[in-house]
Image (cartoon, rainbow, N blue to C red; front, side, top):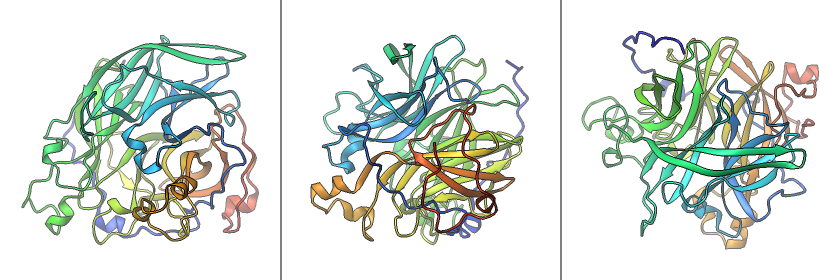
Length: 433
């Protein structure tokens, strides 16, 4: 571990309204239409937010040839709109990165919160497993609350052979961080539609060896402070938070100032994560159309920013920040994307969300008969998107099959020259995983 670096005073970069006003769907940012796969690997459960078991350098871990993903899940017979109220984390494992086996819930009854929301997972050098998650609410609460705290379950044991892989506890659970009210808004301070302090993402900076934890938060904005054009915009105060471990201990964290703020622009900068490519730091978040401030038209999408260092001055990719979105005629077909490097390109995994809505908005789905709500929800991994990256520009170049999560050692199909030069609007097929 390198000595603790000297901290310089730093103004938190802002995603500005001028930048976000440039958001538009283009051939370089719109993914193809998603069609349901012929088979559902786990028909009894619905899954959504997903993350990988990774090593300290950010690589997808391989245990005796197996890779592991974690997903938020709920019973498939529950209405999709209620899934966050009972969410539990399950793990899945695969040898080929496309056929996934359900390992069951990762935790027994000892997990914190009344339910668990998204996070990340680390397989450390000593074999210790750290499963970071959002503890939402409190165990045994009579009515659901939306209190959010950053938590971890550490311990567990992985056993793997040619027949499969198992992860068994016990895990030791602890709350790592709660908002301080100064850098990061407490629940009683917020004035927006949805309070956020969640999605812990473990990250180790390759340039400095600093051990960090990214998370989604809100920046405190005092009424009458005048940071936005009007008070309505002040309620849209999303931020990407960061904490640092001075010792490298994956359970010892201290707040730093946010990496990025979306004050006056967007209320939810979900599931933040960083990928380093060509010595540049790419910060990605997901966000919804309804969480943009009035006057800004942004679709559900993956948004990205680039800087020269982890604590650098982030600037939006493609001038606006939009990297990947759904087609206009299927605006909610996928969500909660995670970008990860694969050789010279990036791959982006998400989940198959609502489809075949026929022009309905998400608010309209709850009014449909239950059987239609179930029929229009994917509840599984979406096709993996291939992304070319060049400085502060990105471009979709293709789509792999549903749930394709390859290791960097595994080659992907070579892209045709015409696809490298320009992604054809008519492309609807999947490249081989």
